[in-house]
Image 1 (cartoon, rainbow, N blue to C red):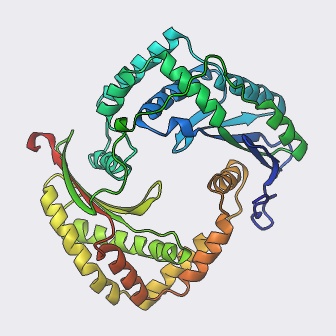
Image 2 (cartoon, rainbow, N blue to C red; image 1 turned 120 degrees about the horizontal axis):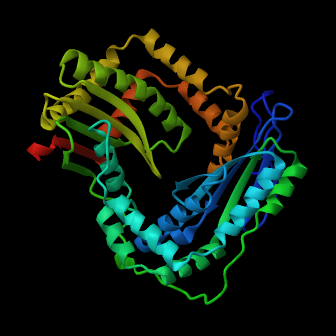
Amino acid sequence: MTTLPALARYAHAPDMVLQTPSLTTWHSIGQYRDEELLVRLSLDIPDTTRSLRSRTLGELWYEALKRASQNTDAKWYQHSHGVGLQLRGDIASLQKNLHDISMLLGTGMSESEFSAIKADLIRDWKAPPSYRFAFQALVDKLREVVLRSEDGVDEKVQTLQTQDLSAFDNLHRSSLQSLNATMYIYGATRAQAELLSRSFAIQHRTENATTVVDSPSLDQPEGPADTNDTLSLALGSDANALLHFQEAPNTLPEDDAKFRLLLPLIKRQYFSSLREDQKLAYGVTVVPVTLDSHKGLALIAQSSTSSPNELQHATRQFLRDFPQWLNTLPESRFEQLKISLADELLPQPLQGEALAEHYWSQIASKRSSGDWNTAVKNALSQIDREELSQYFDSVFGNASQRSLILQGWPAQDG
């Protein structure tokens, strides 16, 4: 993939301007003269994701990078393969910032800097999380259970407490050797993009390099958990909550079309059943869930009067009744929903930062959303209620599909 499709007549498509073993650069010309340049930079650093030990030291490095660049315009973030950042400005300021960041990536830490950041991280990890809504604790627990690489707080604290500066230095050196960067520059000409690419050059550390083999015993076990689980936890509030997660793989456009069609129907009917008809909960919703390769949906309910067991029973009954309700759905409403969803997949006249983010998501995922959306749109037009009902049964009635139920009880009842 060296060129992405443009959004029809709305904007220039991104082109690849540089590809080396450690850096790939894309650019696209802005829509308007004198438009501010936007740079997105993703750093895949496999050595910081291999084990619990490397992930805790990777978080420490991420925190160090944020602190060292806090007086710049850089906005850092973490992703499953490393870290990334966003910059904006003119050519001169971006040249300086990219040069400074590349130098920063290659610079180690002093003993005092390492110790200070280590102590701050351990303190932050130990601090109890604060939630606006009770069910948010269940969402965090879902991440922890579904993503086996989502490390527990106690394990992270215990692991980082045993690490010293030499351990970080070894990880830092090996990470610089394996680092792979992807850059996208919105609003720049090809010549400007090439100039900015040359401003970003990682300086490898080679002094006193040693090879460190991570102990597999530090990691949580890999592989799928039990197909169906029910877990309970105490909430830091007086509310009850339930989260029913159901995995629903949609790697094919046809499955994605059925998933998109099912979601608003089940969301509206779940709300109607638990809140409007039975008045069991004041917070009721269904949301799509994507956790790395795990895709599905979560039925969520929160109540001050109904226990998690009552919410779970009502949810199970709702899922048993849903296929019958689907068969009574007026054909006109079903077809209108298909048309509305298809319209959402049409290319939109995005501008500025929204356009840049659209193209960056395609570059980062290495997939053209235009081609995918066309396939999903075509599949949508072919779905009838019987086919959607079969899809529902393949998701909720298939014992091989992952199902996880999380019950949240008031702390005093735990």
